[in-house]
Image: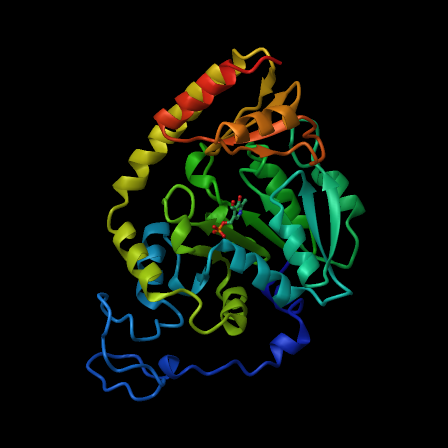
Length: 352
Ligand SMILES: Cc1ncc(COP(=O)(O)O)c(C=O)c1O
């Protein structure tokens, strides 16, 4: 089991010694001030309060609100320009380019590999089992010393399943590196978040996003939640004003209206199950995998054909055939009831 000292010893030396950019707005927080420090335009020319000003670099008021909702401390939260920013910063914080590596469990969300490759960080790939579960023993026995961060997507994209908590905890307690649990789809799922485990496991970083259940994909807001020392390194290396004023304002409003996402989550989950039923009645759909997310993975007779047929009919789904364990699979995001109905009606007309 790692201690916080073990974890911080994994931070790249150049990041440890880095003197971060000191932003003008970070130096003075308070109200009623004359702000002549940040070379902003002093006039509010557009129809939005404070849009002429840089945002609070550490987004403290929003973090306090999120912290009270989640029962954690504001210092345990990093807010990023989408959760993709957190993925990228975690790699840049802990992985030495051309030396260190990350581990992923395939098939999974593609950005882990893309981000690693952009940063010249190697990717050690472990295959999920046939039921899309992680084989923790296989991982723990084979993972090399150069792997600093393991990414567990839970629920997993594109397979839609959840990993067993004892499997996640086994990896957290026995792997000598960081474990990122990406909970982008956690709000659609019956299992609880592992956020409650951040005090037990200092090597745990939980990623969440406002892009899915919260309906704010266009605002680009994601979270990393971990021990405050880990979070302080992410804050040290992020761009100073990484989340814009309009996005933060949208987030503040959303956090005041928590019942809204709750209502839509229920609707999406019930639509998902209806869509699954209807898909399974189509002769060319061989299997629809159980999903704890807002999408369905379906094994088909010919994914390429179905994908292009739907495109010709103005419906975009994803062909996941090139992913391991996903031959002839398409991934369908649950749409509105009307969209789902058009999808099914269109598919019914396909002779395959
Ligand atoms: C598993 C997973 N993590 C992260 C993301 C990215 O989310 P964000 O919009 O917060 O960058 C996605 C987006 O599809 C995802 O599927």
